[in-house]
Image (tube, rainbow, N blue to C red):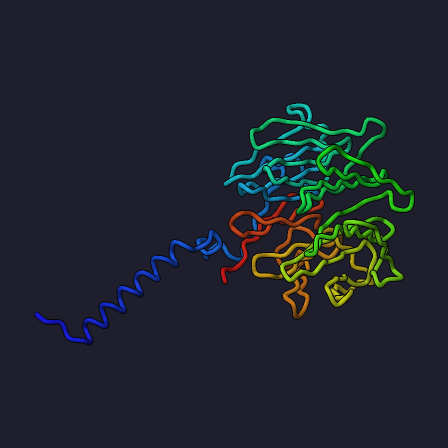
Length: 332
């Protein structure tokens, strides 16, 4: 039977539509494949689930999708598809069980900042380390920059930079306590200290403090977001700040306190900014208004130390004394 023009056009359209649907289904991300029923669910993990401790200092996802966490005095843990693996100084080459921070190099090696130096785990599961031969190196911050340089901050010995030929130490009594290190969208390195911010532009250092508009001189967290803003959290400021090409801006988090103590800052897959506070739970900023999330909203406690994200887009919040809680974001 001869097909009519309408039928031929319909079959052509149906074929194109089917091809598009197949293409889209192949391009779907892990985020889109999540079970919708898990959205908005808070799941707590603590020592009763086998965790080595209930205080989680740092959370980082590696390039293979594994989630790494540090437990002060209790070593580190890796979470991969429901399986936990633990590392302690007594059972591995980890320098110390006191681990404050984690970073990943371009070759997939993980660097753990410990109270006595750096422990390095390669993708082939071999260990290496670096310790200062002269003084104790209590590591508080690590940043692997886009140019491959490794920046390391310490509790009272300033910071170190490895450009590929070994670490070089920079010490100043005023800026000896380093809390966090971040790189902005232009490649500048920002170092948060107890006495303000240090900026390295590749050739020289400049310094920012309360006099330059910072909410407080004790910088506790830094985070670059997808809009090229550098967010700045402090220990005792009344606001949080961000820096962009137009300058420095302030944001009140409306937390009801005279100060807003920020332990960590994170951007989720939707572009919302999350603030982990020392006393006021979580604050989510969607670009319009900050929203507080506290114990009565599902959090196990209001003292949040760290934020991370797994390969499925779920957020993980490290707590001060009750473990780590996973929150599955709603699917957009």
